[in-house]
Length: 123
Image 1 (cartoon, rainbow, N blue to C red):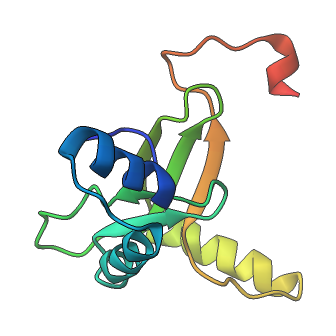
Image 2 (cartoon, rainbow, N blue to C red):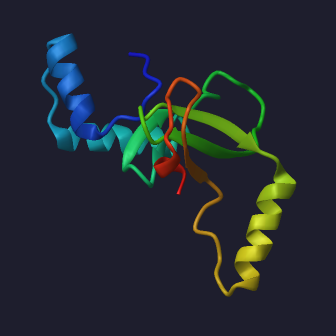
């Protein structure tokens, strides 16, 4: 299954039943997702509570921190890397404000070039 959108455990359960004819309980899907996340094969998007395959699964070299661009209109997700100096600056700014990062994954809501936006969307 290839998807440019992040999917919830329940959406994955439905996909398995409807497309593959295989019944999986949501709890089993959550366990599978947990394993995949622990092994850096998928990412959990905190803003949507959904999962997406890591775009660097087949790479054999290290990558910078992930940044996810999430279209507010169609829910398309694109994973891009954040340069190390940017992550360091975000970390420093966060610490100066009296906080510390829980993780270095950034999620940015935006609009993809396929989706039209209106003036009221940008406020």
